[in-house]
Length: 519
Image 1 (cartoon, rainbow, N blue to C red):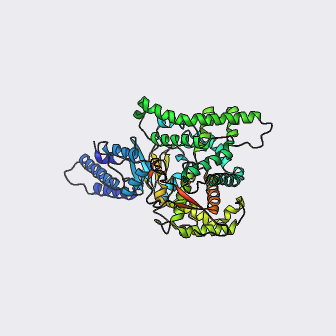
Image 2 (cartoon, rainbow, N blue to C red):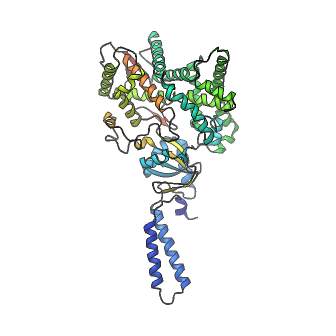
Image 3 (tube, rainbow, N blue to C red):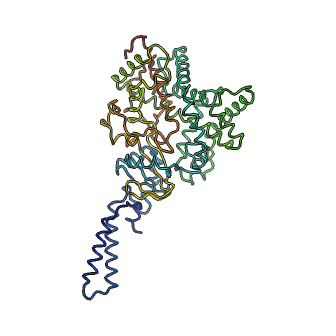
């Protein structure tokens, strides 16, 4: 086997100079044939020279990455993704080989991109609207050709996305602030009533707030937040585990059944909530508020969606925020205490804009310090720092050929730390003194498969932070900082929650005195 040619298969476009040189060589060879060498021999020598020259040029311009070496390279790179997690492995290869890297996941060529021009190219084009992942793994958790997150049936995905878009944008945003403030305040009052402010499990608190908000906005039935959160966590862990596992992994019945059972627990719980909603609709004399779940139920009644797809869509709407938005706000609270000058600016702005009244929708655009703080937090330490795509047709990215079916990982977290911003490796609001171009700042992606919940996500983060910080100074226990926090980075960056070490991630909530914003 030719190891060098096997090592790198994707080559760049732009050999015009080489071709020009070859034409020149061809003309010289024709004009000055050596005596005694036949035309056939001369032609063979010329072709050999051309192939050597072309091979030499191509080898210097191939996509960097680990060598194939009899299949060892693909095996080792795949094992790194399995063992360390997708996010961690992506950062490793970009740091080692550069901002465009070729690796293998489950034997499939995969590009890891952290160069802004390459990332922007993929995000804006419609032939990258598919994602990649194990079909058996996605089927195990109900995501294969269902829902919106990893649905690779592009036609069906577009149909389903319309329901999410309607719920998460436009008129659907009008009462989001009111719901977020009410939910956050209810949970804070419950803490205060129970005198639990001295040691607050902030991650659990934020998850419960976010699940409650999602239920109020998109479902509208009674739920047990803590029970549902346990099932969501099991589902999320299963999702991370099975996403890129090889098919042989699922041949072991007991392993497959264990993951299937973990996913089924949440699916059954969501099915019960949907049935409650069905009964609620049937018993209602008049439907004043047709929310997300009600819209899906009507679509199923008209034959537009299957029951399985309705269940998966509701499930994904419910799980989307607890392990992204809640952890994002947790990271923000840590960053705020590590940057007390930013906290002072933020509190002063809340006083100036809102004063003693309740946050309103019209206030959000006036909270510019808060906007910069959230954006800088998403840049500096994002929860989701990459996205996965698959090429649906042949393409060229920054000069490199990308065959149809190539897997793509867009490492936006690393991109945000390597380009454009004046203080790349520092947490500083100065990084957002000027609004960055979408090319350089992609916390929610862009283009046809961008995060459909990006606008409501910003509204929820602002509402929760203002309601919380207006009343309490949040103090992590000694030594709890982002630098010291043990984290994993598979599907997303998550703190390691060690149940055996009680209070590891807890914080104290100190009431603020009215008229005083002392830290």
